[in-house]
Image (tube, rainbow, N blue to C red):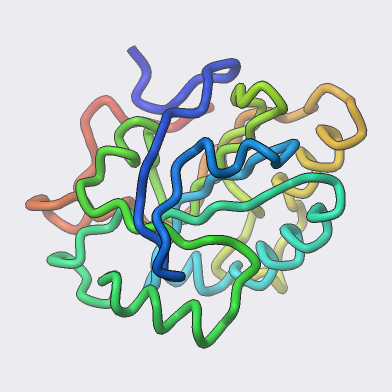
Length: 193
């Protein structure tokens, strides 16, 4: 069995606290035509380097029914910067156009098969996976990016077209798993393509 959610599979359920003081479940986004769930964090240079491009993409597709949900599953014991308290500060500072959820138990990261930060999962109207992987090809330095795979996937999805490139390898820091070395990845987790 693959570690990462496969194309056509349904979005796994979650029920997680957000930086806005509320708790959100998958059902809270039922009104969204399309859903982008992405695993992110506070410290990773690949996240920090591409957050503004992710913001632009989220804002570009907001009026087409696309909702973004960010999830931080990193162990705060591995990186203190990834604590919930620091998530709240980061959202207050940057005011990103998505809810930012804390997956303390890492169960949601395992359910989705999150490999890196950032790692994007795009779901259609039936909440079936239609795209997974990277946002852009150079998230650490977006001035050097040549392709925005997430934007391309959302452009095709919102136009009712099949997604030309539905799977890419996420580029970023690996998820920081509780009790493991900072660079550890589950043995069954490998490149998607």
